Image 1 (cartoon, rainbow, N blue to C red):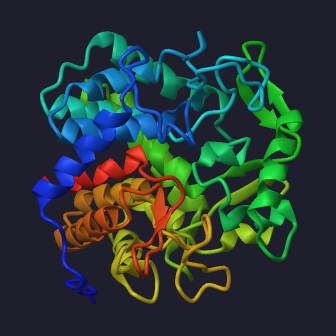
Image 2: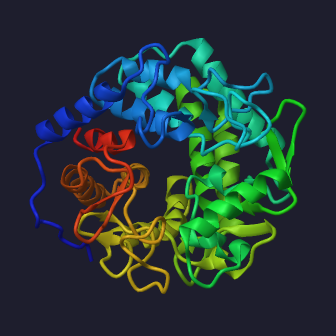
Length: 390
């Protein structure tokens, strides 16, 4: 049964769009062609942040979205690898290179390119080629024998401190400081290519459900953009592999798999487990997962989608990746609901996100129960609320 979220009230679309445009415009760096997520806390360029900024710019009818998406590929390696960070000053904390990181993030760039093309922006062949080479690199360098993609650092998942990594960290109680120390310690355990791209790890390799879902969705979006049936086949094959190897009948979610390290924490139910709905062909599985988005005993809350169900032992509405809502994940869940024609669910997610974005001051993430701001404020990807007003 769909949960009604009529109170508190939802701000007007015009107000949300005006605020979103101001946040992006205020942080825009013309010379660099992108918005840092938050100039004080996150002064560099992050890959999927910029992809989400591009989507928000596009929803606002601003051509800077095309510039921002193009800027994501300024640091692309000759091999096609797309790093998750482009530094504005020298940094070697995320690999051996000083100008860019050696890890990647979910390839949202294909979806962003398709969205912009559909909106009438000119996505040229150079950008399409960059997107294609980025996905080709993943399929060529990160594909497991089971037909699923691996990541070699939690940074690549997008959900840095997800409870699913707890078995690697080996702590019974969560502390962000422990995760930060662990993250840094994984860098020397990484195997890098001659170019400097991360290709393996001696301490952490995982098959995350969400990363695979976003990649399979990216392949299908690239097929829609180019008409290349090879990418349709790749996306469908990856989606089928997820159904075969990652679906968990008990929770009605897709779960992660450990490859190097890890353990039972990969079965902790998180919002990441819903994103198989972006690519599965199984109607019943999609319905089971999508319904949980608006179930108040699972992920549905007044101010967004909980990252963990409310009855999960690890749930904390204020703790980083332990319960708060994240605007970029709200948006991808919104896209998944639209894919299945679940307009009521998509509408509820849009209302949650618009309400919370305004209440929190367009924060990096927020308390799902009361809308209180958490993390950096404002954060560019919260402007995605504007993409849910259309």
